[in-house]
Length: 221
Ligand SMILES: O=C(O)c1ccccc1NCC(=O)[C@H](O)[C@H](O)COP(=O)(O)O
Picture 1: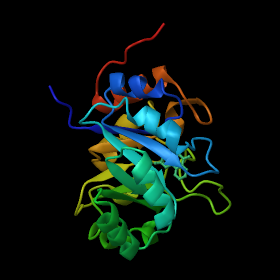
Picture 2: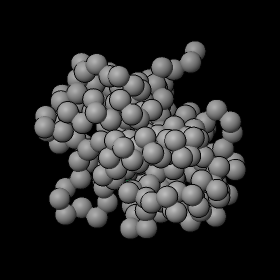
Picture 3: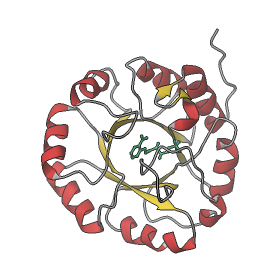
Picture 4: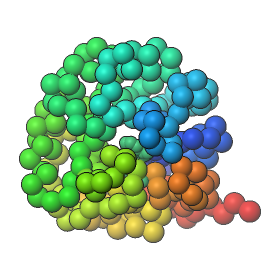
């Protein structure tokens, strides 16, 4: 039976992370292009990993306030299926990026309180998908990938204009509850499937996907 939940494993850093995520059933793989991140990839490394991803699995490039020169080089050198804009890109910039690269755009929105929810409708008019993440702390180095959750009750029962993904502090232990509470049909994880910062763990990836998909987790010896 096909599961109704799509999982995105974000911040793959090792070529072995690709088969680990695919075996676990992930439908989206995220590659980070942000130099301050422990998950940052060169275009060459990302292209090598992306070449091993079968059709039907979405290769997502995550960028932060990237300019056209950076995105031109990225899209020329790495085969991609989606761009994730994880900075303070305006709705106008989302429209521009969609038109220039012809790729679907997922806009990340940081949520900490009810005041952050108005922008969901605004970006819902221009993006192809939304990624609803925890707003980073004021002094955070990274705008995402911090392993922090937000209060899921803020978005429980919400009506969504476009497909969306729940992110932020998800783990194998809490993802089923997060899905039940928010009604998310897509979930994203990075820190929650790492053995140390920036290092993905095949068992944790399997545990996360199994918990999200409502299946028993396989055990790797
Ligand atoms: O993951 C990063 O290093 C990163 C760096 C810069 C901007 C965004 C980043 N990650 C964004 C993601 O899509 C993460 O998967 C999402 O924030 C959830 O992360 P986590 O809370 O660690 O599961």
